[in-house]
Length: 417
Image (tube, rainbow, N blue to C red; front, side, top):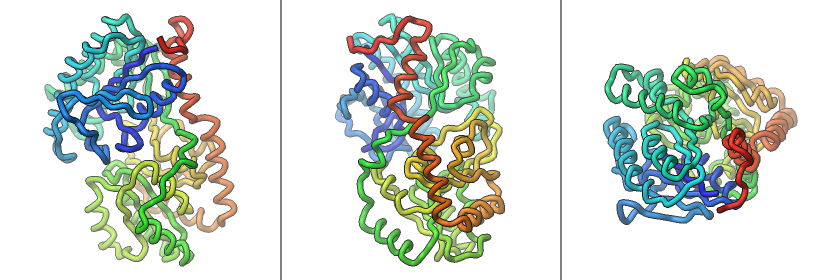
């Protein structure tokens, strides 16, 4: 079977986020399918950009055919730059996709919904099934998190495209477990919905790359001094609410507790300034971002992992943070400061859930994990890893994806054509 994945922000382990498209495609290739990912040449959330020599550049990554559509570079803080990138990618897809001779399955992945239009043209030309894969609800995310006006012409155009996608897609797949009601209100038939969460490549813990020497030396020094290392790995953005986490460290009033933040992002300078205001220079360490394959080595040095989201109505539809899977694969106990349905940390027993943006609640979680001792923390982490292996293996999720997409269309084609 020939699968075409249209995903503006698609990345790879070498390039950086977003990883989900790569992992699904890799499993489909392993099953014998041919997979093409069409993505933008520039993304503000990738660590490394692909080398693009012309308007369209092809590259093979682990058996997956990537087509990089040349789009402008922009500053992550530039709203205009992002809009231009979105429009550029959509236009490029309108020229790139018609050159693909045949597809059995066309998947349009939404961070934004505009590419649904060229994706549907390819699906109609090929007689292929069309899937709208939703990772973020746009434009609702821009309205509820970004403060955009629903009446803005660009937002209205985005809403029209999203509603169109829900109507014309054969299936709507989402990493958000409770999104079906919202989608139904925008034109989707409920029987189209399929929940496929973000998963994990189970070999990642064994196939990791070592951290840079400076990173490793710092971590070893902290461990040797008897510190309890509470860490975070990922994007340092406003939505990740690391500010209350640092306030919680200060309120612990225990200099044996040390926070490690691995990553970069637009909120990093403000976070560094906060450390100075709270006089936490001796209790907080910032480490520069590393490749995805090196994150597993970082997690090996931690005692506890932290993840937090803002308290936002948007999260009523659920969340699927990939870093939680990374933490669980490393068998780490987790402080989960998130208010959203389908709490995998609570379900698996992998950690402690507390209210987000509440430094006292986060402090209490840190102290509880400190006081329970290393054996109890390890048992908690082991429960999380066991649950992850049973429920989030990409090999299982990739097959579930195809089975669900073709459930009402006969048997899933398992062999490449």
